[in-house]
Length: 335
Image 1: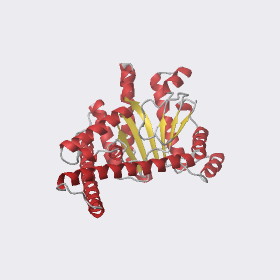
Image 2: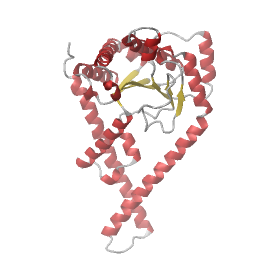
Image 3: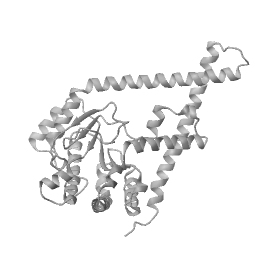
Image 4: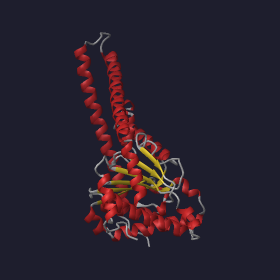
């Protein structure tokens, strides 16, 4: 099945979509697509067929999101924890992923037409090389598209992502790009795999499970979380509408919490900058206390220098990550 499923909503769906769009709509929705294996057992089919039905439902859900003017979707496709499943199932999932990314590359003209940018978040080094190369080609091919975004979390857990972000900052310090004092909550956010995306407004988990299973833990601290009992392959347009309605009912409190967090982050950064400036003045002030004007000038200078360092570091990090995908693309895809 195609990644881009064409077709309009039916009349009732169109009316419902228009009613929903009169209220605040999420711009970024994340899905934990749970229930493929239970669906397969329920329908007396092979597990692999259950996973195939799950992918087909993703294509359908992306179509609904397009009609609902939701420009960004993130999906939990394969957790690092999934490597603990049987070899047969893991191999089957890798083969399914290979088939789907091959199909995606065949549809590059359609992806360009719709402006779909594909990002894959996770440690691709854990995957077979042929799959890494296909993923890299999909990412590089669609990198310039900017109408809608699909983030596929593959070989991913949130704790691994956060740990990797800490490693990236340590690398920046080792390279002399940033100082240890530049490390902050906001910088860590910029070092996550998801740094190119706004945090999800709405996270949906299907199958009745009510845990996040190590998915986007950092990014969803101020998101609306909706847990639905339906199995993912049976997910419907009406299930999505229900989740969006829950988001709308909680929109004001979510926005208020986000604003308070932004203010708290800004205050934390200001206090950290002041502490660094005070330490610098103490060591270079010949024992004389600095007056208010000098402290303010030193603070402005330090802040500008820190922001320049951080920007240079983030550019270097972006180049390193882009080079990883570009280097994979330079290799021929293995047969």
